[in-house]
Image (cartoon, rainbow, N blue to C red; front, side):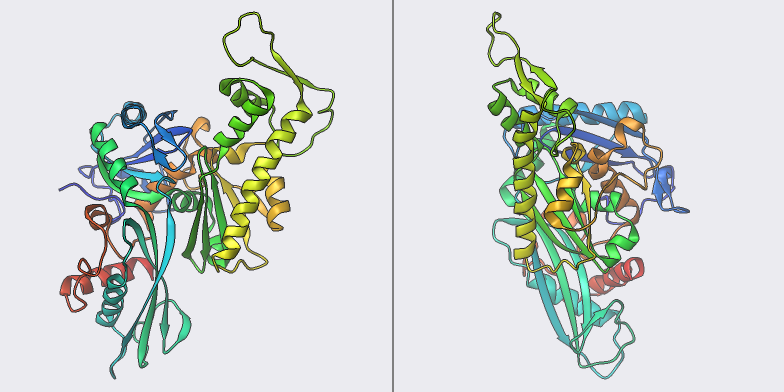
Length: 438
């Protein structure tokens, strides 16, 4: 039976299957493959056996817009990673920001008896919380316990053996559009791959780029992709909230193409080689050339001062960051004054983005990289590859979720799907979750 990545830790058994992570974005599609011996428990790192990536096709903003093109690009990325790893894969865990991802908070409270709190009480609380998940036309992809409370006292990490009259539980549920999920699943079928799980891009990037102190004391990981900008808020070692905007690096490219009357390819080249979101020295005197739009052979190149490029880039990046900041404020997730920011994703590598983020959020900002995958080649070790690395790190080290990836992929979680609070299987799963997470 095929193992679902994320359901349990990979072992070093050579007969165990490989784990494949697919980073599905609007600008690139990448695949990382990890063999069973790639899990290094001694220092909690991983070794990637093979990596491959291609230019994305068929994906725009928050959705797949061309099934055949997307399936072909996925197949090419996986095939390159398979050749590098020397191992075939039949299924992938997808890290992505498509599907209008959003966060929902579910709370449950159960009465306690005279005995100390045990696994059965925690299982009842989890079962009751799962029964409260009602998300029409949405597909839950993460179900993570955030906090326990006993008699209303919050901040309890492990309530076992405590005494009280009631036990409370908060669950964070991350969901995506059911229609987009079904499209993604069918797209992978066209590429002859099984969908073994979906991981929200900012969650995966967080696992790759954040330090333990950052997830404990509070941090926001902002994943700046080609078609979207997403954020994951962490505190007390738990995921607290996810925010998503369908604006990314490709929108900056489109702004340059329109503003400078050049082709999209020319705009992307200008952005990559000379783009900046902040002013730089001599930019008024430095002139840049770009190909004209259209196929007129007699038309000369577009010549503009570098300062004009900044006047196009900076407003779009600043507007995106300000919109994300306002969304986070409206979410009700309090960002403490010391909460830092970590930027990941390909668009975060644009010059001046970090400095602009410092100004917009008024807090420390650093650029994140896949820190616990030290053996990656230079071409695959930058901020753009945090999502793929994070999917593998999640498979290796968790966090383990309250609902298995296999069940989440099989159907929506509804009250009818939730296990009986008295079922022995739920108690066993709860005990297993506690052993790995508390």
